[in-house]
Image 1: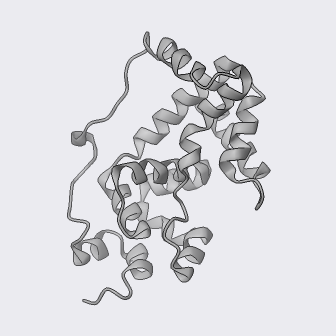
Image 2: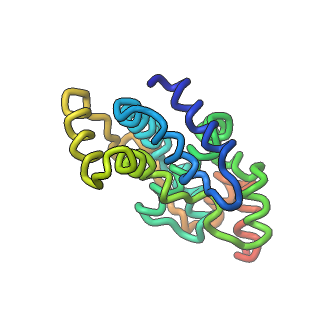
Length: 190
């Protein structure tokens, strides 16, 4: 699966998602309609785009929107960015503050809902789809270990995350993320 096909899978799931069927469920359905090899290839692409936004500036946006953001929550936020689709993902990767223009973020900020983009289940869609195909909840991880072992380990370290800064420094956050700060720091003084 190449990146074009990966984003096609994401878009198909986005179109199938409804109020009663969240994106992650629709994604599992889409992946489960494919081969085990396709699911593993999907996971490889997912990991690549997920890691590409493992950056301090993106984490700062998640921190603002979530009223704080642990490492685990940041995984969920990045999965949620992917769930927004290629166009929004690329826009946010280029400028995290652009999230202030997304309708879901605007509505969530107005409602003071702090987990609008976070999507934990999207992180595990490939394993859930694999389990649906095999009936074995461990099969994905065994297959994934065999699939990825001959490939180069990607992984990102803190040196690749860009410039670190204090998320609790309100002036710094306002300077770096002015549009999101206008939504999420409006009651924070200064």
